[in-house]
Each structure stands twice: as structure tokens, then as C-alpha cells.
Amino acid sequence: ETGVTQTPRHLVMGMTNKKSLKCEQHLGHNAMYWYKQSAKKPLELMFVYNFKEQTENNSVPSRFSPECPNSSHLFLHLHTLQPEDSALYLCASSQDVVAGYGEQFFGPGTRLTVL
Amino acid sequence: TQLLEQSPQFLSIQEGENLTVYCNSSSVFSSLQWYRQEPGEGPVLLVTVVTGGEVKKLKRLTFQFGDARKDSSLHITAAQPGDTGLYLCAGALSQGAQKLVFGQGTRLTINP
Image (tube, rainbow over all chains, first blue to last red):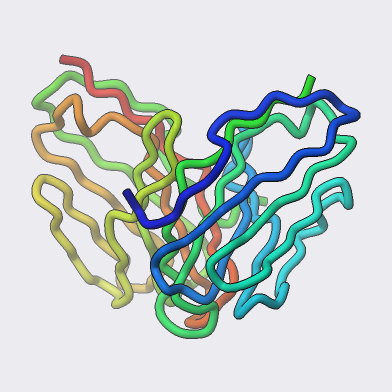
């Protein structure tokens, strides 16, 4: 148990569906991250939020829409996805993007399958 | 271009053997972390190294940061089946860097 929870753990959706992934951290951290992990690529950073403000968008397609209502919660809204978007989506948090050595604590991930 | 190169990418050995995994780069990192990820789970932080030449031990795991802070190694002594997993190194290019640079991972299998 790392203090970062993600729901759902598994999600199957059609290309026309709209769904959302949820992440919650119980560590008192101020920075939160979304990553994509697929079989053939290293961890790909998608978005970074620091104190609820988006500070990084790593050229992510607009069919992925993040939302960070507060420092403890992070959402990833999905719409009109493509089959190649099927992957493990990981949420992580850290104390602060400025302080510390960048140690990140990951949730268990959501395994997404797009049909 | 992969900033952090891990080798080997796959390793399958027998229980009780020793092994070393390498993480190399041409870039200097202010800190480097090692994570282990088990199937169906997220990566779990094992250690952070910040000083060139630093060595840290975690039971049977020994982590070393290169003198020039461009590379790192993970050595496992007397590997156990419970060591099986994906090992990831990740570096911060500067203190306070927003992003970690991840290696592609080493998938380790320890056979009983």
C-alpha cells in the first residue's frame, strides 16, 4: 500500500465511450502525475500538476483531459479513444515538484482496454 | 533517443544466483531512483541515491551511484523468487526537476 489509490483497476471501453479514471493520494503531497505504460515503451509522462496547477503536458492528444480539483485528487477524462491507447495508466504523487529528490509514489494503475 | 539505458532488458536466473542490472546515461543526474514493479501493480520505490559514488544496501540488494552521477547499478545477492519483477531506474536531471527520466526496465525472473 503506497498511499495512492486508483479506480477503476480495470476498464474496457469502446471507441465512442466517455469514461474517467480517478486517483487519490493520502500522503499529503502537492504534486501529482499521470503516466502511460505500454508493453513496448518505457513509462511515458503525460501530465504534471503542482499545487493543483498543470505544469506539464507532454504533447498528449486532446482525447485525454486531466482534472485536478485539489492536491489529493486527480482525474483523467477519456473520450473517443483509439485501440492504441490501451495501456496501464499510472498515477503518482510526490512531495513537491520543486523540493526533494523527485521521489514519486505510484498507485496500482488502471488497465485500460479500448475496443 | 533513450536517455537512460538499462541492461539487460530481460534476465532469467536460478534461485540463489547473483545478478547485476545496469542503468547508464551520458547525462548527469542530481538523483537516481530504483523502483520494482510487480505484474498488475504500480512501481514501488526501493531507493534514492544522490551522491556520486554512494552505495546503499537494502537487505540482499546493493545500489551504487556512479562517481560522475551518470550511471547506477543494482546488485542482488542470492536471488529469491520474490525478487521477480520489473526493475526501473529513474533519474532527475536537476533538483526540483518536474520530470523523472525512466529507463525501459529490466524484467527479472528468478526460477525456483
